[in-house]
Image: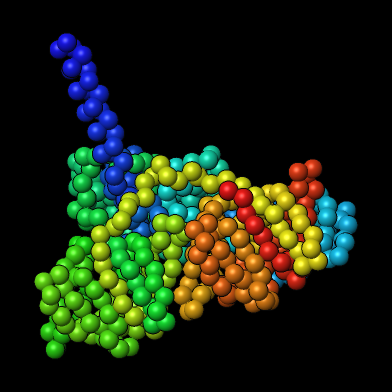
Length: 411
């Protein structure tokens, strides 16, 4: 009887530890340096990424058979048949029209490992087994990265630069891991047009955590306030912000890019689709609150091929694997555009449908039925480089933007 009770107790404890090990949405991993040192802990990437839902930006290398210039129409494809503006065939010959890369992004949760290949190139291995090369295109990749901080259990807080990196193996944080930075800032941002966005906060493309500092001047006195002591930030003017603290005190701060139109943008990472970036002129108010849930590493699958049905303006339909804008073909990839002066980065796996509304805009509908009319990007306007569908028999269909009506993705 004692042995059974002990076994049951051990089982309950093991289950409790398993649950506890999966309660953090923070980026965690093991970094091996070029000198052979290994550090394990929570990771803060380029100052402004700290959670699995955050986006790693870069330039994606494309397969050589698709390298061509992005500002040209598709011509000179061998062995093609054109019917009502739809090109059908298997050939990939594009004459002298070459392009080799495209701006891209991926949420950290999809990445299994990262290898620093050279000064401005990383090899990403995704959970799906897919390998993707990301080069610089932002400060997230390469020697321009601002900093990489890892909180090692034994060594403490360590700051690394790109040249220090050999490999990074990402994993879920164990339950015993603790961070000096605390949990990620979370809240609801309201724009001057009244739109609301809720999620994890990155302020001024810089501050993420309660221990980070918001600074400014109040009546000629310099103030440095930890974000953990702030309940709300409200735009006061183009050159000032009104701050409300947790103890009820209020103040107006000026003289810093944290609180004026030099602010580099406020990013809200919405776990259900990606992120939005709001500039100061469109910002009205941000109210901080506890996160409703953490998005765990295990919730990301590494992506899969985009599948769905494309409809043309003349009523034809084509179903199969989809390559959008001739460069996005996986659910982890990012569709971008602007809605009411807010910049959107939407993970394609969250998109239910895209419907062309004009040469310059499209309505993007998410699986949770939210819709946004996006413009300002070749993902959603006449600059689109083509929608390609690989049919079940292997033929590839190209639909140009002028012939495209809508696409409905499959889950």
